[in-house]
Image (cartoon, rainbow, N blue to C red; front, side, top):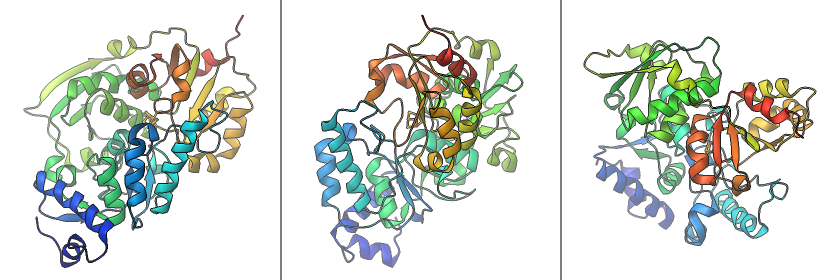
Length: 390
Ligand code: F3S
Protein backbone atom coordinates (compact mmCIF):
# COMPACT_ATOMS: atom_id res chain seq x y z
CA UNK A 1 0.00 0.00 0.00
CA UNK A 2 1.48 3.33 -1.02
CA UNK A 3 1.62 5.88 1.82
CA UNK A 4 2.47 9.58 1.50
CA UNK A 5 5.31 11.05 3.58
CA UNK A 6 2.74 12.53 5.95
CA UNK A 7 0.96 9.17 6.35
CA UNK A 8 4.31 7.43 6.94
CA UNK A 9 5.16 9.94 9.66
CA UNK A 10 1.83 9.29 11.43
CA UNK A 11 2.43 5.54 11.19
CA UNK A 12 5.92 5.98 12.64
CA UNK A 13 4.46 7.72 15.68
CA UNK A 14 5.83 11.18 14.87
CA UNK A 15 2.40 12.70 15.54
CA UNK A 16 1.67 10.90 18.78
CA UNK A 17 0.65 7.48 19.97
CA UNK A 18 -3.09 7.80 19.34
CA UNK A 19 -2.70 8.79 15.71
CA UNK A 20 -0.15 6.03 15.25
CA UNK A 21 -2.58 3.46 16.68
CA UNK A 22 -5.42 4.71 14.49
CA UNK A 23 -3.24 4.76 11.38
CA UNK A 24 -2.30 1.16 12.13
CA UNK A 25 -6.02 0.28 12.11
CA UNK A 26 -6.53 2.00 8.75
CA UNK A 27 -3.46 0.59 7.02
CA UNK A 28 -4.17 -2.88 8.47
CA UNK A 29 -7.67 -2.83 6.92
CA UNK A 30 -6.25 -1.41 3.70
CA UNK A 31 -3.77 -4.28 3.42
CA UNK A 32 -6.41 -6.94 4.09
CA UNK A 33 -8.68 -5.54 1.38
CA UNK A 34 -5.91 -4.77 -1.12
CA UNK A 35 -6.16 -0.95 -1.03
CA UNK A 36 -3.39 0.73 -3.01
CA UNK A 37 -3.64 4.05 -1.20
CA UNK A 38 -5.58 6.15 1.30
CA UNK A 39 -8.26 8.63 0.25
CA UNK A 40 -9.31 11.81 2.13
CA UNK A 41 -12.86 11.67 3.51
CA UNK A 42 -15.31 14.54 3.72
CA UNK A 43 -17.03 13.28 6.86
CA UNK A 44 -17.30 10.32 9.23
CA UNK A 45 -20.14 8.66 11.11
CA UNK A 46 -18.98 6.61 14.06
CA UNK A 47 -20.77 3.52 15.39
CA UNK A 48 -20.01 1.93 18.74
CA UNK A 49 -21.73 4.75 20.57
CA UNK A 50 -24.16 2.71 22.62
CA UNK A 51 -22.87 1.61 26.03
CA UNK A 52 -24.86 -1.59 25.49
CA UNK A 53 -22.58 -2.40 22.53
CA UNK A 54 -19.15 -1.20 23.62
CA UNK A 55 -19.32 -1.81 27.40
CA UNK A 56 -16.57 -1.00 29.91
CA UNK A 57 -13.73 -2.15 27.63
CA UNK A 58 -14.80 0.19 24.81
CA UNK A 59 -15.23 3.08 27.23
CA UNK A 60 -11.71 2.55 28.57
CA UNK A 61 -10.26 2.42 25.04
CA UNK A 62 -11.98 5.71 24.12
CA UNK A 63 -10.71 7.35 27.32
CA UNK A 64 -7.15 6.29 26.44
CA UNK A 65 -7.17 8.16 23.10
CA UNK A 66 -5.65 11.62 22.82
CA UNK A 67 -6.55 13.24 19.49
CA UNK A 68 -9.20 15.33 17.77
CA UNK A 69 -11.38 14.76 14.71
CA UNK A 70 -10.11 16.57 11.62
CA UNK A 71 -13.26 16.16 9.51
CA UNK A 72 -16.94 16.66 10.46
CA UNK A 73 -18.00 13.56 12.38
CA UNK A 74 -21.16 12.43 14.17
CA UNK A 75 -22.22 9.37 16.16
CA UNK A 76 -24.63 6.55 15.50
CA UNK A 77 -27.85 6.48 17.58
CA UNK A 78 -27.37 5.52 21.24
CA UNK A 79 -29.66 3.85 23.78
CA UNK A 80 -31.54 6.99 24.86
CA UNK A 81 -32.32 10.64 24.21
CA UNK A 82 -29.34 12.17 25.99
CA UNK A 83 -31.51 14.96 27.45
CA UNK A 84 -34.96 13.37 27.89
CA UNK A 85 -33.79 9.91 28.98
CA UNK A 86 -35.68 9.96 32.28
CA UNK A 87 -38.94 10.60 30.46
CA UNK A 88 -38.17 7.56 28.27
CA UNK A 89 -37.99 5.40 31.41
CA UNK A 90 -34.26 4.61 31.03
CA UNK A 91 -32.47 3.03 34.00
CA UNK A 92 -30.28 5.76 35.64
CA UNK A 93 -27.31 3.35 35.91
CA UNK A 94 -27.43 2.73 32.13
CA UNK A 95 -27.89 6.48 31.48
CA UNK A 96 -24.81 7.34 33.54
CA UNK A 97 -22.61 4.97 31.52
CA UNK A 98 -24.17 6.08 28.22
CA UNK A 99 -23.44 9.73 29.07
CA UNK A 100 -19.82 8.77 29.86
CA UNK A 101 -19.46 7.22 26.38
CA UNK A 102 -20.94 10.32 24.77
CA UNK A 103 -18.58 12.65 26.62
CA UNK A 104 -15.61 10.45 25.66
CA UNK A 105 -16.51 11.06 22.02
CA UNK A 106 -17.07 14.76 22.72
CA UNK A 107 -13.49 14.99 24.00
CA UNK A 108 -12.33 13.47 20.69
CA UNK A 109 -14.10 16.21 18.72
CA UNK A 110 -17.04 14.12 17.49
CA UNK A 111 -20.18 16.23 17.20
CA UNK A 112 -22.81 15.12 19.70
CA UNK A 113 -25.37 14.22 17.09
CA UNK A 114 -26.34 10.60 17.43
CA UNK A 115 -28.12 9.84 14.19
CA UNK A 116 -28.41 7.45 11.27
CA UNK A 117 -29.22 10.38 8.96
CA UNK A 118 -25.96 12.38 8.89
CA UNK A 119 -26.86 13.49 5.35
CA UNK A 120 -29.37 15.98 6.86
CA UNK A 121 -26.53 17.59 8.87
CA UNK A 122 -23.28 17.71 6.94
CA UNK A 123 -23.07 18.62 3.30
CA UNK A 124 -22.60 15.38 1.37
CA UNK A 125 -22.32 15.46 -2.38
CA UNK A 126 -21.98 13.18 -5.37
CA UNK A 127 -18.49 11.66 -5.55
CA UNK A 128 -17.51 12.50 -1.94
CA UNK A 129 -15.51 9.83 -0.13
CA UNK A 130 -16.88 9.16 3.36
CA UNK A 131 -16.27 6.87 6.32
CA UNK A 132 -19.77 6.10 7.61
CA UNK A 133 -20.81 3.10 9.61
CA UNK A 134 -24.57 2.75 10.08
CA UNK A 135 -25.93 0.50 7.34
CA UNK A 136 -28.90 2.66 6.24
CA UNK A 137 -26.74 5.80 6.20
CA UNK A 138 -24.13 3.98 4.12
CA UNK A 139 -26.81 2.82 1.70
CA UNK A 140 -28.31 6.32 1.37
CA UNK A 141 -24.92 7.98 0.86
CA UNK A 142 -23.85 5.48 -1.81
CA UNK A 143 -27.15 5.08 -3.61
CA UNK A 144 -29.19 8.26 -3.27
CA UNK A 145 -26.37 10.80 -3.10
CA UNK A 146 -23.74 8.95 -5.14
CA UNK A 147 -21.07 9.46 -2.47
CA UNK A 148 -18.66 6.58 -1.75
CA UNK A 149 -18.33 4.75 1.51
CA UNK A 150 -17.75 1.24 2.73
CA UNK A 151 -19.63 0.16 5.84
CA UNK A 152 -17.08 1.06 8.49
CA UNK A 153 -16.79 -0.51 11.90
CA UNK A 154 -16.67 1.77 14.96
CA UNK A 155 -12.85 1.91 15.36
CA UNK A 156 -12.16 2.40 11.62
CA UNK A 157 -14.76 5.21 11.35
CA UNK A 158 -13.26 6.89 14.43
CA UNK A 159 -9.78 6.48 12.95
CA UNK A 160 -10.97 8.08 9.69
CA UNK A 161 -12.59 10.95 11.62
CA UNK A 162 -9.26 11.70 13.33
CA UNK A 163 -6.82 10.95 10.49
CA UNK A 164 -9.19 12.40 7.86
CA UNK A 165 -8.61 9.48 5.49
CA UNK A 166 -9.70 5.92 4.81
CA UNK A 167 -8.19 3.10 2.74
CA UNK A 168 -9.39 3.24 -0.85
CA UNK A 169 -10.99 -0.13 -1.63
CA UNK A 170 -14.47 -1.63 -2.07
CA UNK A 171 -17.17 0.92 -2.80
CA UNK A 172 -14.62 3.77 -3.03
CA UNK A 173 -13.73 2.35 -6.45
CA UNK A 174 -16.09 2.96 -9.37
CA UNK A 175 -15.48 -0.52 -10.83
CA UNK A 176 -16.98 -2.13 -7.69
CA UNK A 177 -20.24 -0.19 -7.93
CA UNK A 178 -21.86 -2.01 -10.85
CA UNK A 179 -25.14 -3.89 -10.33
CA UNK A 180 -25.14 -7.65 -9.78
CA UNK A 181 -28.89 -8.43 -9.88
CA UNK A 182 -31.87 -6.87 -11.65
CA UNK A 183 -35.08 -6.50 -9.64
CA UNK A 184 -38.14 -5.76 -11.74
CA UNK A 185 -41.02 -4.37 -9.70
CA UNK A 186 -44.51 -4.87 -11.08
CA UNK A 187 -47.53 -2.82 -10.04
CA UNK A 188 -45.94 0.00 -8.00
CA UNK A 189 -48.97 1.78 -6.52
CA UNK A 190 -49.31 5.43 -7.49
CA UNK A 191 -48.35 7.71 -4.59
CA UNK A 192 -47.20 4.82 -2.36
CA UNK A 193 -45.68 6.10 0.85
CA UNK A 194 -42.26 5.32 2.28
CA UNK A 195 -43.52 2.25 4.18
CA UNK A 196 -44.40 0.54 0.89
CA UNK A 197 -40.80 0.95 -0.30
CA UNK A 198 -39.60 -0.26 3.09
CA UNK A 199 -41.66 -3.42 2.61
CA UNK A 200 -40.29 -3.75 -0.94
CA UNK A 201 -36.77 -3.40 0.47
CA UNK A 202 -37.56 -6.04 3.11
CA UNK A 203 -38.21 -8.53 0.29
CA UNK A 204 -35.49 -7.26 -2.06
CA UNK A 205 -32.76 -7.45 0.60
CA UNK A 206 -33.39 -11.18 1.05
CA UNK A 207 -33.08 -11.69 -2.71
CA UNK A 208 -30.01 -9.50 -3.14
CA UNK A 209 -27.86 -10.80 -0.27
CA UNK A 210 -24.58 -8.96 -0.72
CA UNK A 211 -25.10 -8.16 -4.40
CA UNK A 212 -25.80 -4.66 -5.73
CA UNK A 213 -29.37 -4.58 -7.05
CA UNK A 214 -30.61 -2.37 -9.86
CA UNK A 215 -34.37 -1.75 -9.80
CA UNK A 216 -36.72 -1.02 -12.64
CA UNK A 217 -40.44 -0.29 -12.49
CA UNK A 218 -40.36 2.13 -9.54
CA UNK A 219 -40.11 5.91 -9.20
CA UNK A 220 -39.46 6.61 -5.50
CA UNK A 221 -38.68 10.01 -3.99
CA UNK A 222 -35.91 10.62 -1.46
CA UNK A 223 -37.77 9.50 1.68
CA UNK A 224 -38.98 6.38 -0.12
CA UNK A 225 -35.42 5.61 -1.27
CA UNK A 226 -34.25 6.05 2.33
CA UNK A 227 -36.72 3.41 3.52
CA UNK A 228 -35.99 1.06 0.60
CA UNK A 229 -32.23 1.09 1.22
CA UNK A 230 -32.52 0.81 5.01
CA UNK A 231 -34.64 -2.34 4.70
CA UNK A 232 -32.31 -3.97 2.17
CA UNK A 233 -29.35 -3.34 4.45
CA UNK A 234 -31.28 -5.11 7.23
CA UNK A 235 -32.59 -8.23 5.46
CA UNK A 236 -29.57 -8.41 3.12
CA UNK A 237 -26.13 -6.85 3.14
CA UNK A 238 -26.91 -4.22 0.54
CA UNK A 239 -24.68 -1.14 0.90
CA UNK A 240 -25.43 0.26 -2.57
CA UNK A 241 -28.34 -0.07 -4.97
CA UNK A 242 -29.45 1.66 -8.14
CA UNK A 243 -32.89 2.60 -9.44
CA UNK A 244 -33.09 3.05 -13.19
CA UNK A 245 -33.56 6.71 -14.20
CA UNK A 246 -33.73 7.79 -10.53
CA UNK A 247 -30.50 7.32 -8.57
CA UNK A 248 -27.48 9.34 -9.73
CA UNK A 249 -25.19 6.56 -10.90
CA UNK A 250 -28.02 4.77 -12.72
CA UNK A 251 -28.64 8.02 -14.60
CA UNK A 252 -24.98 8.68 -15.35
CA UNK A 253 -23.84 5.16 -16.27
CA UNK A 254 -27.19 3.76 -17.60
CA UNK A 255 -26.19 0.30 -16.43
CA UNK A 256 -27.19 -2.55 -18.71
CA UNK A 257 -29.10 -5.41 -17.10
CA UNK A 258 -28.01 -7.91 -19.72
CA UNK A 259 -26.56 -11.05 -18.21
CA UNK A 260 -27.82 -10.24 -14.70
CA UNK A 261 -30.14 -12.52 -12.78
CA UNK A 262 -33.62 -11.10 -13.29
CA UNK A 263 -36.06 -11.25 -10.36
CA UNK A 264 -39.64 -10.02 -10.30
CA UNK A 265 -41.32 -8.65 -7.18
CA UNK A 266 -44.97 -7.79 -7.62
CA UNK A 267 -47.13 -5.41 -5.64
CA UNK A 268 -49.21 -8.28 -4.15
CA UNK A 269 -46.10 -9.71 -2.45
CA UNK A 270 -45.33 -6.28 -0.99
CA UNK A 271 -48.97 -5.77 0.09
CA UNK A 272 -48.98 -9.14 1.90
CA UNK A 273 -46.58 -7.72 4.50
CA UNK A 274 -49.19 -5.13 5.58
CA UNK A 275 -51.20 -7.42 7.86
CA UNK A 276 -53.13 -4.72 9.75
CA UNK A 277 -52.57 -6.47 13.10
CA UNK A 278 -53.27 -4.52 16.29
CA UNK A 279 -50.25 -3.11 18.15
CA UNK A 280 -49.81 -1.55 21.61
CA UNK A 281 -47.36 1.19 20.54
CA UNK A 282 -46.35 3.03 17.38
CA UNK A 283 -42.78 3.94 16.43
CA UNK A 284 -41.86 6.09 13.43
CA UNK A 285 -38.43 7.29 12.33
CA UNK A 286 -36.34 4.34 11.18
CA UNK A 287 -34.21 5.79 9.65
CA UNK A 288 -34.56 9.09 11.54
CA UNK A 289 -37.30 11.36 10.14
CA UNK A 290 -36.61 13.99 7.52
CA UNK A 291 -38.10 17.49 7.89
CA UNK A 292 -40.77 16.49 5.33
CA UNK A 293 -41.70 13.41 7.33
CA UNK A 294 -42.08 15.47 10.53
CA UNK A 295 -44.30 17.88 8.63
CA UNK A 296 -46.48 15.03 7.29
CA UNK A 297 -46.83 13.49 10.78
CA UNK A 298 -47.74 16.83 12.34
CA UNK A 299 -50.43 17.32 9.66
CA UNK A 300 -51.87 13.86 10.30
CA UNK A 301 -51.95 14.48 14.06
CA UNK A 302 -53.48 17.94 13.83
CA UNK A 303 -56.32 18.26 16.35
CA UNK A 304 -55.96 14.60 17.52
CA UNK A 305 -54.94 12.93 20.80
CA UNK A 306 -53.01 9.68 20.71
CA UNK A 307 -54.51 6.78 22.63
CA UNK A 308 -51.35 4.64 22.81
CA UNK A 309 -47.63 5.44 23.20
CA UNK A 310 -46.24 6.99 20.01
CA UNK A 311 -42.50 7.43 19.56
CA UNK A 312 -41.07 9.50 16.71
CA UNK A 313 -37.29 9.59 16.18
CA UNK A 314 -35.18 12.19 14.39
CA UNK A 315 -31.77 13.79 14.70
CA UNK A 316 -31.45 16.58 17.27
CA UNK A 317 -30.50 19.01 14.52
CA UNK A 318 -33.66 18.27 12.49
CA UNK A 319 -35.80 18.41 15.67
CA UNK A 320 -34.36 21.84 16.55
CA UNK A 321 -34.82 23.16 13.02
CA UNK A 322 -38.41 21.89 12.83
CA UNK A 323 -39.47 22.95 16.34
CA UNK A 324 -42.90 24.08 15.07
CA UNK A 325 -43.81 20.63 13.71
CA UNK A 326 -42.38 18.96 16.80
CA UNK A 327 -44.56 21.14 19.08
CA UNK A 328 -47.64 20.24 17.05
CA UNK A 329 -46.79 16.53 17.18
CA UNK A 330 -46.15 16.58 20.93
CA UNK A 331 -49.38 18.45 21.64
CA UNK A 332 -51.16 15.24 20.53
CA UNK A 333 -49.38 13.28 23.27
CA UNK A 334 -46.86 11.67 20.86
CA UNK A 335 -43.18 12.12 21.73
CA UNK A 336 -40.33 13.12 19.43
CA UNK A 337 -36.97 11.88 20.69
CA UNK A 338 -33.43 12.53 19.46
CA UNK A 339 -30.19 10.51 19.66
CA UNK A 340 -31.86 7.09 19.74
CA UNK A 341 -34.39 4.86 18.02
CA UNK A 342 -36.92 2.06 18.46
CA UNK A 343 -34.28 -0.60 17.85
CA UNK A 344 -31.31 0.55 19.93
CA UNK A 345 -33.23 1.92 22.92
CA UNK A 346 -34.27 -0.49 25.68
CA UNK A 347 -37.32 1.78 26.21
CA UNK A 348 -39.42 -0.10 23.67
CA UNK A 349 -38.78 -3.57 25.02
CA UNK A 350 -41.85 -3.27 27.27
CA UNK A 351 -44.40 -3.56 24.40
CA UNK A 352 -45.93 -6.72 22.90
CA UNK A 353 -46.27 -5.48 19.33
CA UNK A 354 -45.13 -2.21 17.75
CA UNK A 355 -46.53 -0.71 14.55
CA UNK A 356 -43.77 0.78 12.38
CA UNK A 357 -43.66 2.39 8.94
CA UNK A 358 -40.24 0.96 8.13
CA UNK A 359 -39.04 -2.25 6.52
CA UNK A 360 -35.83 -2.10 8.55
CA UNK A 361 -37.74 -1.79 11.84
CA UNK A 362 -40.02 -4.64 10.72
CA UNK A 363 -36.89 -6.80 10.45
CA UNK A 364 -35.07 -5.61 13.58
CA UNK A 365 -37.73 -4.86 16.23
CA UNK A 366 -38.52 -8.57 16.82
CA UNK A 367 -34.85 -9.57 17.11
CA UNK A 368 -33.45 -6.53 18.93
CA UNK A 369 -36.41 -5.44 21.13
CA UNK A 370 -38.10 -8.76 21.70
CA UNK A 371 -41.44 -7.18 20.65
CA UNK A 372 -43.52 -8.18 17.63
CA UNK A 373 -43.65 -5.74 14.72
CA UNK A 374 -46.30 -4.88 12.15
CA UNK A 375 -45.77 -2.54 9.23
CA UNK A 376 -48.26 0.12 8.17
CA UNK A 377 -48.12 3.32 6.15
CA UNK A 378 -47.54 6.51 8.14
CA UNK A 379 -51.28 7.21 7.81
CA UNK A 380 -52.14 3.75 9.16
CA UNK A 381 -49.71 4.22 12.05
CA UNK A 382 -51.39 7.50 13.04
CA UNK A 383 -54.86 6.03 12.54
CA UNK A 384 -54.05 3.19 14.94
CA UNK A 385 -52.39 5.59 17.38
CA UNK A 386 -55.45 7.85 17.57
CA UNK A 387 -58.23 5.26 17.42
CA UNK A 388 -60.66 5.37 20.39
CA UNK A 389 -59.87 2.72 23.05
CA UNK A 390 -62.33 1.15 25.47
FE1 F3S B 1 -31.60 4.34 12.33
FE2 F3S B 1 -32.19 2.89 14.40
FE3 F3S B 1 -33.42 2.45 12.14
S1 F3S B 1 -30.19 3.46 13.77
S2 F3S B 1 -31.98 3.03 10.59
S3 F3S B 1 -33.54 4.33 13.37
S4 F3S B 1 -32.65 0.92 13.52
